[in-house]
Length: 267
Image (cartoon, rainbow, N blue to C red; front, side, top):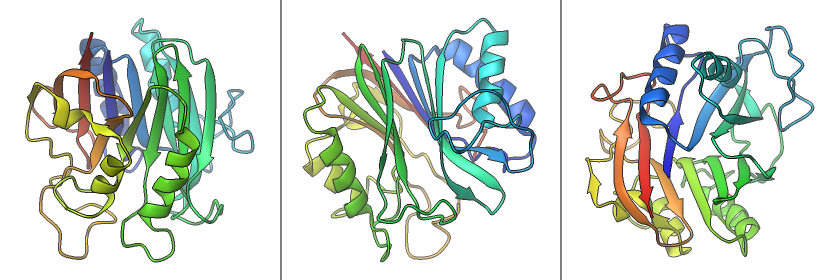
């Protein structure tokens, strides 16, 4: 099984349509079984569609990044199920959310409120998107920051962890805003909760850095120039043949201000 997580920074990127095509071309080559995307946006002004999101109060719109990807996947003969959850307002002009694409049927789809407040207009609002297939639960997150006084990472993770108890095999992936090389903060908290980092378990891997430039949320303060803040964790130990960054200008083109992370789990 191959899992891909990627913060797309969608619609803020230049040449977005070209990058969507390049993304689908890469998917056709990599053939991930599960794709988790963050910052999956649509503009407020675009025309609405008949498709329904996980949040029924926010409709799909024509320029929705997940919708555009889904159309391109179909055009290329790639069969995936899709779920999109709008979480909050992004940059004052987007419905910003999370998306899953899975090869196997989604047996259940749900969401957990992770932030203290549930305010769609507040950039600190956080939710998870959770889908179940025959392979277990897959959880997509875009977490807040460790030192946020109003919505700290610790409380968000504890809400999610509690909701995932006794769910069998659980994979949690996405943009954690938690550098793996910083001790005593978000990354360590997740591991102390019993979740295993697939990158650390991998037999073969690269340097794992998913952010190598200044990005929103990390422009101030003292932090490394390169960070590993995008992760895939599992509640159980699995055999990981490979973990590497994706869309980093090597095997795939750079498409976002993040690199993606790909993990291949062997039998």
